[in-house]
Length: 554
Image (cartoon, rainbow, N blue to C red; front, top):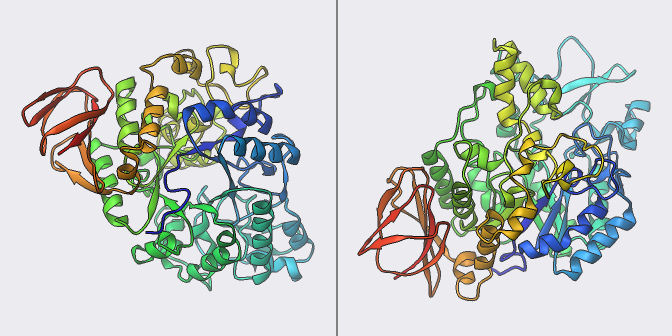
C-alpha cells in the first residue's frame, strides 16, 4: 500500500449548527468553530469535517443546498470560511466540507428553471416524468412516501430519494456532472483538504424506472432494492475522481451503503474512487425493514461480530473510516451500551472502535460521552426522518406513547442537540435560545469538567489519539494487521494489532460482571487501561466490569 498523508490522522466531525454560537442567535456558526480550534488542537484531532454550511432553506438541516458557492448567512460569511481554513492550517489541521451532489434543494436555480421550462436544458438536470394515474416506479423515499412528487404547475413529476425539497440530480446528463466538478475544483482551490461525500451510492439509478415487490402495506419498496438493482456507478465515480480529487491529493470519505463486495477495491483500493469510506456494519444492526418501531437493541456479541466481519472484509485492500456515531445516528454510548452507561463503559467502547484498523472519526460531543436526549412529545422532535418513522409506527398500530418511545431511540436529534461546553444556561453553547433544546444532562456531562479531570473520558480520548501517533506504537496501530482473539468468548471483544516489531492485544470486557481471559503469551507491558488496576496471573487476566486494556505481548 502506498502511504498517504492522511493515514495516521484522526478526524472530527463538526455539526456547525450545534457546535458553538458566537453571536447569541441560538445557531452555531463559523466564527464559533474558529474560537474552538484550540480545544480541538488540544484534543489532538487533525481533520475537521463540517456538515453543510452552504446556502440552504434547511429543510433537511443543510443537506438541501440552494447555492453551492455561498455560505448560508446563519453560519457566517465566505470571509469567515476563508479565515477558518487559514486558522486551521496554522494548527496543522485540515478542513473537509460535505459534498452533497445526489440532490440539491428545490430552491436551487437549476430546479426553479426546470419548473419554468420542464422541456428545456434544466429539465434534464433532474428526473422528470409526465403525471399520470401510475407513478413511474414504486420506490419509497428514505424519509417515507413515494419518491415522486408533482413539479409545481407543469403536469410533470420529479424524483426525490430523500425529502420532497431535495430533488435528485440527473447524473446521466454530462452537463450536470460538469457543473458538479467545476464546483468541487472551485472549493479545492480555496484550500480545502477534501470532502465527505454524502449519499453518493444513490447517484446511479436502474433505468428505465420499474416497480419492485412491495415490502410494506403502502405498496412501496425500500430504496435499498433500487440500489441492489443499479449498476455502472463506477463510470461516474471514476470520472469524478480524475476530474477533481486526484488533481489535489484530496482526502475523500464516501458515505457508501450497499456497495457490492466485488467493488470494494474499486471504491477504496490503491486507485479507488475515494480515499476511504465509512464502516456501517455496526450501525445497521437490529434495523427492521418494517420501520424504526420494530428495531431491536444491539448486543455485545453482535457489535463484536460486525466489527470483525468488516475488518475481515476489507483486509489490506484499504482503510475504512471507523465510527460509533455521527449526525445521522443516535449517540453511540446510548446505542451500544445499556443505560445509563458509566464512564468506564464509555471508555471501553471508545477504545474498542478506535484501535481497529482504519481512520478513527470522532463526532462532536462523543469525546465527553454525550448521550441521547429526552423528549416527551413528537412536537419536540425536529428530525424529519424521525417524524416520518413516528407516522409509520402509528399506522402499524402502536399507541402515540409507544411510537414516541420507539423513534426517540433513533432520532437524529440525539446527535444534534447543542454541544455541552459547560454547566451554565445553554450549556455554554449560546447566550441566546438554542435552536434545539439542550440535553438536560449537561449539568453532569460537559467539556469544562472533563478537560480538568485527568481520569475523564475526554482525557482517555487524548490518550487513544496519542497512542496512534506514538513513535513506539503508531506504526503498529496505523499499518499493522488485524486478527480477532478469543472470538467465541461471550461479551469479550479482543483482537491483535500486529506490526513488524510490536504486537498489541486490545481487550474489552463488554459487560458489568468481571470475567477471566487467557492470554496468548507474556504481557510485556500494560500500554493503556481504563481502570486503576489490572490483575494478571501467569497466563490469565481478570477483567473487571467494562474494563479495557491494551497489552504489548510477546
